[in-house]
Structure formats: structure tokens, C-alpha cells
Length: 183
Image (cartoon, helix red, strand yellow):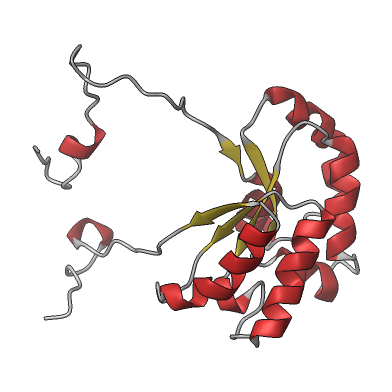
């Protein structure tokens, strides 16, 4: 594998070799603008009523899924928007009937900022499934996969799609500092 000065050339170069195995699964695109879009731009202050006008159009695009819930949305809807987070799922589901819904879940932290007891986690994930979440993209900030165990059981029981993720961050000279390592 070749690397450019940033270490990525070999990873980004497409392999057009005719002997390359054909893919059986085409690329699937998940839109995250209804969750991360407004989280990144204006602190997750996107209101459900502002999402409704674009929901039907987004449903027609043919996305693999739309991530529209999770992360900071639950907290912000309570504290700043005076909205019911569960109602957002149900309302948008009425306007997006073809596209599966996805959420970002913080493992044992669910959508909070600390670990919760197994029974709380189980009840939360069950309610997310019951309200219309189809795909649960799960991460743990410390990459401790034991924090996936409780949520995975509920996801599987409900025959929903589990997406496990890992967290990483680049620190290197082109970002203004020394390369960080544990040495």
C-alpha cells in the first residue's frame, strides 16, 4: 500500500483491476442531516416542525436510511425546544414512509452523559424500537465494547439492525501538533 505525505493515498486509490471481485452489495447512503446537520451548525436546535417540509422530499430520494434521532437530540428537545423526543419519531414517520430511520446511540449511556442501569437501557432501546427506529448505530466513547452488550440484546430481540462503531481521532503535525501516542 502506498502512502502520500498524509498517509492516505493507498487507502483512497480505487482498484479497477478486472480480476477484482464484484460487489454483491452496492453503496448505501445514510443521510444524517436531520440529526447531525443541525447539531453541528446550530447546537441541535432544529425543531420537528422545521423538518416536516423536507421530510417528504427526503423520503423520495431513496436513501438507505435517515439518521434523525439520538446523540444530543433527546436532551436538547427536552431542555431547549420543549418537544417530546418520542413524538418526533412518530411525526416524521408519517411523512417518511419509505425510508428506514436510524439513530445514534451511546451504548450503555443511551442518549445521556453517564452509564445507566441495564433495565433503564433495555427500556429505552425497546421504546426506540417501538416508536419506529429501524437502525441503531451504537458507539462507546472509550471503545469499550462491553457497553454494547445490553443494547445489542434488545436490538436483536426486536429484529432491528445493529451498527457497531468505533471512535477515533487524528492528531498529527498538519493539525498543528505533535503526533500523539502512548509512548
